[in-house]
Image (cartoon, rainbow over all chains, first blue to last red):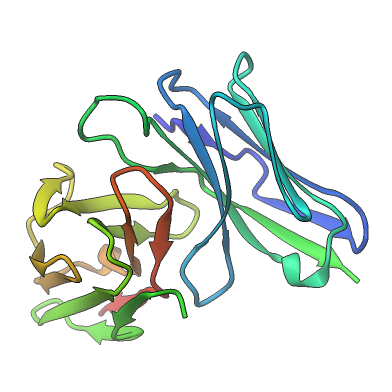
Length: 116
Length: 112
């Protein structure tokens, strides 16, 4: 059973507009969430994170929103640029828990294409 | 430069071959990971080493064997693989378990 879900495999957005990537999770013990960006033939690159004590974290053009009651987070990119075209992975972990063997659990990714 | 280096970048091997993937990190991290990325599937965690101790994912077949000789190096030894093992194998490291992971560029493995 997939604990982290990215239901949109792909998304196309016009350059300059806002890109919104969504992620849902099922494990209520997750308390730390991350977004990774991946270009072809490269490993994923860490982009931005948020802990469950916050509902928003902003870093330049990237903002992550967390809705704990809905078990939903989203990544907003504004304005979108051609270089943002990549696959975006959502990941979650129970970083602050004492489960011992906790690890990052990844979604399947969303391919974002920015149209010039 | 990601700080995590994987070699080789590409590998083609027969089902009877034995090969090894290598990962190196100079970030001073305590945890290192092997992930497998197959098409249309989430990144699958294969192995975790934390402070050079291994936590094994029980669903990983024994034809994959990790080795962590020190905190900076991680190997994945491969033997008698199957065609369905063809995938992108990613190494990552993080300061601690579950914190931001830094990934290498991956090894594209093809089993013929």
